[in-house]
Image 1 (spheres, helix red, strand yellow):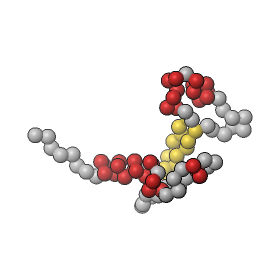
Image 2 (tube, rainbow, N blue to C red):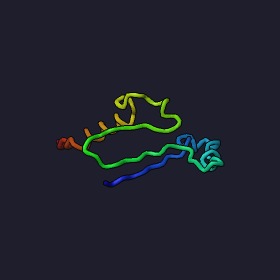
Image 3 (cartoon, helix red, strand yellow):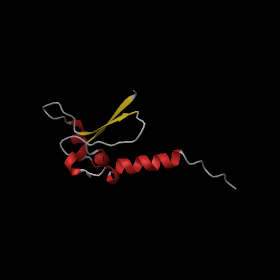
Image 4 (spheres, rainbow, N blue to C red):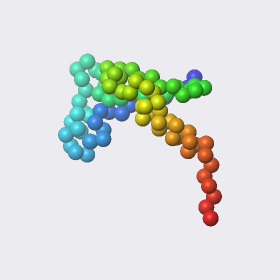
Length: 86
């Protein structure tokens, strides 16, 4: 089984403002990472599991999660052939 792990540091969207650059450079004393990790594994069907200290703040229904919505959008684009231009 192939797997991939992606990591996005916390507050990466606001790095250009300056203050979050300091936050991205710091690490907790216990060595944990500040940010999100996503593990992607090959499978026959799509499934989404959220775990971690803030998982309770995410939608409990996987279909309401933006990751599921992006997956379906990606599949729609991937399996739809582009229309020819006139």
